[in-house]
Length: 92
Image (cartoon, rainbow, N blue to C red):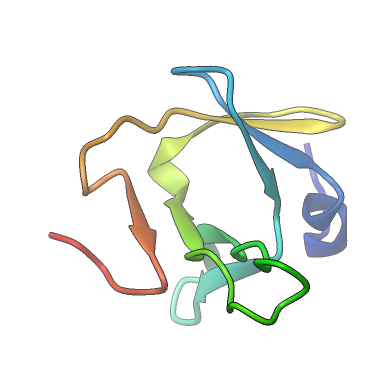
């Protein structure tokens, strides 16, 4: 299946561990040497009209993506820090 980055941005992301809806793809990380997508990024939601900042961004590594469907991307995230990163900082 081929798809464009713009197609990814229209898909809802759902965690298969607990069924939670995480949001939509806002950005992607690309390895410029290999030309492969390494992660998808969900921007944090604004708090009270943006006055009180926003919640943390979520970076989901490609290894955690299980299925890319027509409308949904299923990901497998647990509470382990290596599963995802927040605000672009890698927790290892």
